[in-house]
Length: 346
Image 1 (cartoon, rainbow, N blue to C red):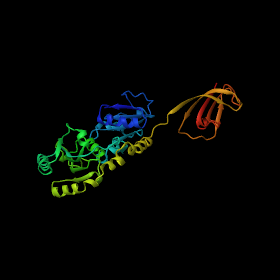
Image 2: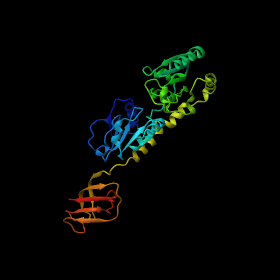
Image 3: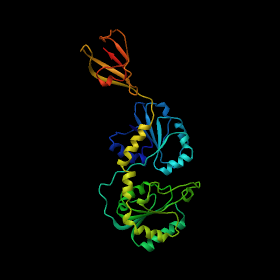
Image 4: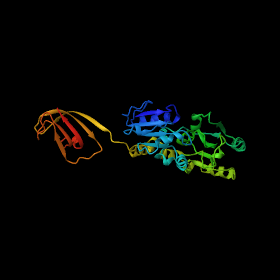
């Protein structure tokens, strides 16, 4: 397995420990020689038809598909991994499904070995929201809650502090690096989220008015989510009342942990279609019917089933003498020969 493309990306750094946990040995190498079984690419698309024996997985850190994704058109030996159902739906509606196969799998995180003791403090994440919304949420925290708190933005995150918090408040656009939220959920920190409903709610750039969310990995186990400041106080009181009932870590363990993503990753790999690779299997010796021990080599196509037929050609008789070649399906006792193969004796 090799990793290509932007191997310094956050996605790549996060997935390497997961691959190693599965006993893969990923190597960063932008040169593909064609003998690789699996290639994982980050933010870099290539025409995979040039490597028909290799399975390709493409991860993208961009919200929108790049034009280079057209290189994958009609290629069966590749798949694009979307890290959330929201992103999958977005790309699907933009027509990416017409170019290539897509699947959904989050970048997995390791389970917490020991939960950090929670203190009576909170964290607040504010990013790319209208000034009046940011002002509203800051005043609410400072004047009503009066708890020890820290405010984080995209460029300033203290993960240790987040793990120690009683809860977190999120008022963010969709463009925030949501691995921070995934981390909070993995640490069993309930979240109160003032979410967005469309991309244009994010002020980082001009966006179309299509569906978006700041919390792509979420369900009601993780906390409370609202979409405006109407009835804000009653929604907050509901969140505080149910604080001990929220179990965000349970959601994380069943959707984003190594263990929960293992089967998803294997299914994605198994579903990729590649041209069968001709295997050369060297076996030190084999006892033929006249009990002579000979060295031999099997060249096989592992995807074909045996039909119990064979053809003996070359300098041989029906007893397979020293110099002969058997082409077809062997019926010898060694089960490795019981496939569509070519057995050469010498």
